[in-house]
Length: 264
Image (cartoon, rainbow, N blue to C red):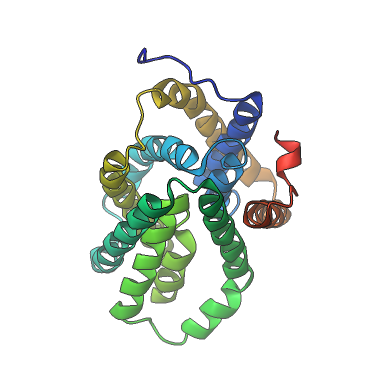
């Protein structure tokens, strides 16, 4: 295959992928919370789950390259180590899941769908969860567990944010240190994921041209998010995205065609 040959994806994929990249960029800019969780489930409606996950990983790493330098001196090393140790275990379990179910697309879609629904449930109950935890700083064991859960969900669907938040927010870190710790953590997790993705055969040369086409859209989303942050609140936009993510998750989980009818 020619290095820059464009894969023969359906038209629905390109339309969906463009939308996903804009949303991912918006999330990176801080406009909307957890928008990246929609990426893999939505792409999985148009292409196989493994292809969707493999395509997104290099794009996320490219974004990390531009994000991490801003926080290279603003992070908490102790919490970073705790979460990363747990995440390594979660990534290993996620790799086993991929290997066990990679030939069963229905099981893969159900898994991604279940994670999407769980993400929304956690986000809805986030205030209650954090309210309970805010009275006491969670001990390292909670960080290891939440890191492992985050590593697993990141390996499967690039959506490790909610578990990490449950541990990190109650630590009452300064905002820039909190953001920097999370940014560096997921940059390291994404780099580690390259290893199992490679051995699972998920990294493909044919994706290079697709990545080059889609990457600028993510940065367009970042620019748009910066503009929107100055003039609008993301409250109702985030609620809409969560509702859409819930429908997408139910679609993948049940096969009801709640969303996929619009992207096929």
